[in-house]
Length: 537
Image 1 (tube, rainbow, N blue to C red):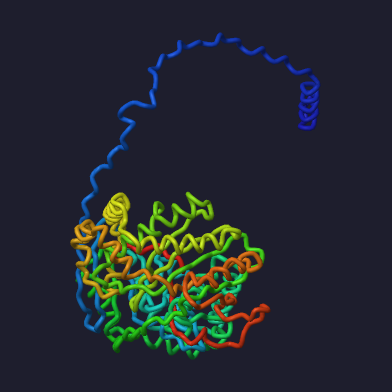
Image 2 (image 1 turned 135 degrees about the horizontal axis):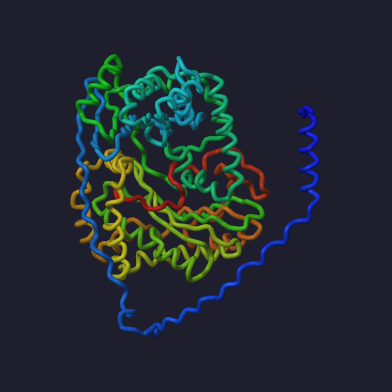
């Protein structure tokens, strides 16, 4: 009889059901093994008073610093080039820098140069934003444009093999930016959202307010951007900003696998028709702070108070720079500094306290401070004043100065540890008007600084009084203690003044006072109110 497909299917189903109905096979019992015992290994006693433990191990020798060679030359159109050739990686990193920035903003349009320079890298006339980003991704390159307090920078980072298309896009961004209204509106809205966030964060408010108190509200370093000043910036203003960037006197910093001849061959034809003089650096007037005043910005319910205490400082080109650097490190620049050991380790008021000097082309300012427990605000302010006075009162200990000298010398090779670090090391030297050979002999100079020289630097560059003091915190908790310090005239005769998060005076009832500059003195700033001391250069 012929077997059909249907018959086979029925047979298979019946077999499957029969198998499924069978009880499971009992599992095999696990194999029992006898554990292997190991004889204990006898170790000798460990004595905590062994002689070698009495002395801390000596550090190894400090690595010798080999300064990378830097070559300078000028392109036919007047661009000054600073080149550090690097053969380690097949990359090229360059930044084109101009002496124009936020110091050139009109008072009623603070934020102009920063916002408009950001607009330049949003696309070109040929490529809108997304297409411009895709073009960069196609060649694994990075392009950017930004404006800081005193300079504006155009940058390119690329693999050596993609440098040619990278330079095409770089020059297109520089010479033919898109400058579209929709991009400007988006960037402005983002800036305004950032302002709102800053005003709501006690840790961010000092970055915004403190520099205006140190330099003065109408000083080029001291202007504060607001929604009103940002709204005043028009597309026509940005087109004028873009038109300022000319080659003669601009500075091109290049580091990577490239030579002088290759730079000239690559950039020369692309920029041969670009002519004109670059902007000159703006002359910066002296700071005129409102010293001797304790300023308070109220943030109701804040769990911590952010304290900043300081005053204008020395020029970066001052002859006692090394002694001043060590002084700032001992006072507040390192973890073992006096301020940190006091507020953190001894009193337990803060996770950390710090202090140092922030340098600009037109000067500097000293600042010390910390984020402290709200209930310890008044006591912390007093301790900071005590440490500053103590720095002036006597020379540092031998242990303090040797620790900071060794730290500065040991850390120096890290300044040149990568191509990017190398580029910025030389860029800062040029920015401050120092010679490119400044690092030659640095270890000898800092190693020869004496305790007496450090104390003299403290006397010269730390004031006895008339400090600018800013506290951001819960006024309901801290105002009484701050008023007592103001009445005591611990920092000067300026009393206690209430400010809003834009640095504007506030009446006692909490309402904003009539808009006017703070008490007739001028100044400004950029760096954070409690800076980490900058490395040499």
